[in-house]
Each structure stands twice: as structure tokens, then as C-alpha cells.
Amino acid sequence: MTARQISFRKLMASGELVRVAGAHDALGSTLAQQAGFQAVWASSLEVSASRCLPDASVLTMTEYLAAAASMQKAINIPVVADVDTGYGNNLNVAHMVHEYEAAGITAVCIEDKLYPKVNSFAAAAQDLLPTADFVRKIGTAKAAQRGEDFYVIARCEALISRLGVAEALERCYAYADGGADAILIHSKQRDQSEIVAFLDGWDGRRPVVIVPTTYPQWSAAEAEKHGVSVVIYANQGLRATVQALRSTFGTIFADGTSLGVEDEIAPVSDVFGLQKLDDWLALEA
Ligand code: SPV
Ligand code: MG
Image (tube, rainbow, N blue to C red; front, side):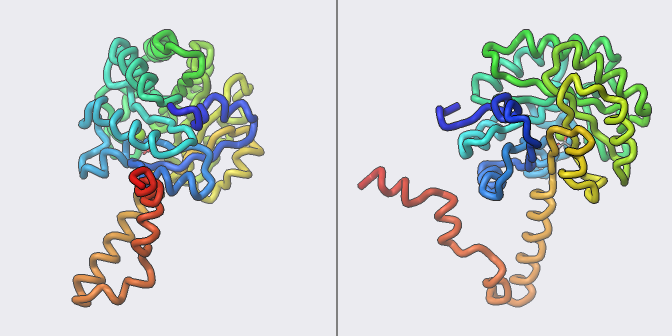
């Protein structure tokens, strides 16, 4: 991490709501920073989708780390790395923490699903580790970090697995007491009601992170009023990219010219700006 970069822990210390955008590469991360987001989520869904592979523990830790590290190098807001289950057992988790921390990543999010995991929205088994085992996994991650700044978010998938709010709360209290710096409670419900029920039962001992993909009507401001500290817009950038490329390529191919899209696409000068071309050319001058 360069001196210009702020760690996720320092960002959280401001006490203000943190809004995070999902991305999978340096370009998306840079655009998220330019839009005003305070952090970037290195999404496992996005990174795997960028390779047209499923978000199912198919890519290796090394591949996810390379993506997160190249994102972090391009920006000075922190990357929060989605590290799935930690890529295996507790020893894998310790290795993951060593490698991510050494690469300048200041926050990781580990989920309580069984390895190999599948994306939370997939119609597939979403089985969880027993609570005590995941508490040990979080403890291993915290013990493995070398600096005090490193931040570990424990992600609970109990609502995804339809185990109910009481089980989710019990697990999240155990994860918090086991050393997690924050907890992420995920839901695939079409409204925020089970997240609100969770927040009503949460005593605030650790910050709460949410991912309102299936309940987009719930604004960040409303979530903050209910005690949420971090809101992650995990995959909207990827979905926008899919739509934009499909439409642009389709129009050019159908028209036999790019004229019909020229007013809708970024000029090459914009791309040069994102590449910091002038700074690079100045190095040579
Ligand atoms: C991701 O963006 O990879 C996430 C969030 O983990 S979700 O896709 O909702 O599981
Ligand atoms: Mg993920």
C-alpha cells in the first residue's frame, strides 16, 4: 500500500456511513472512486464473471488476489476483498491473510459457507459451517494478520440458507465475539424486512455491512437509520457493463458502422485520462 492510500479500518473510524461499489479490475475501481464511493468491493461474482467462469470456488486464491491487488494499485481508497470461504480450511485462511496483507489489501470478507461455495443467488445448496468452526476460522484469520490495521469482516449466510433471523443473530454474535471486526449479513429476499428484523435484534457490538442487491428500494440513508455502517453495491457495475457492451456491439454489427453509438460511448481522450497517459509521458520528458 502506498502512503497515499487509506486503510479500511481508518475509513471505518470516521463513523460515517461507508458506501462501497463492486468491481473486478482497476478500471472499474477507478470509476467507482471517481463516482465518490469510499471503498471498492473486489467481488468474487465479478472477478469470476470477467473470466466467464462461475462464482463457485473455481478460480484459485492466487487469481482472486491478483485481481484485488491490481484494483488496489489503481486507487487510493481501500479495496475490501471478497475472499469467499477463505479458499479452504483454517490453514488456507492463514495463508490467504498473509498474502492479501502483504499485497496491500487492508480488508477481507470471509463467509461461513462450506468450501467449495456457490454464489448466494444460485439455486444450489448453501450449506454452512457449524458456528464453532467458523468462529475458529475467524480467529485464525485475526491471529494471522501481521499489522493492527488489517480488517476482517465475517459474512453470515444464514438468511441465504433460510435458517431464520434468530440463527443469523446467534451466529453473528458468536463471530463478533470470536474477533471479527465487522459482520456482513446477506439476504436474497426481495424486500429489506428480514434485514430490518436482524438489525432490530443486533446490539451494535460490531458494525454491520449489507449488500442490497435484491432489495434495491432500500436506500443507503434508510439503512443507516437502522444502524447499518457499510452498504455494498456488489455487482451493478458488472451488470451495467454487460448491458452496455451487448447494446453497443449489437448496434455496430447491425448497422455496419459505429456512427449510431458514437454519442453514447466515451471518447478515446476519456480512456487516455483513465490511463493517466499524460503522467506517463511526462516521466519520459
Ligand atoms: C459478490 O459480489 O461476489 C458477493 C455478493 O459475494 S453476492 O453475489 O450477492 O453473493
Ligand atoms: Mg462473492
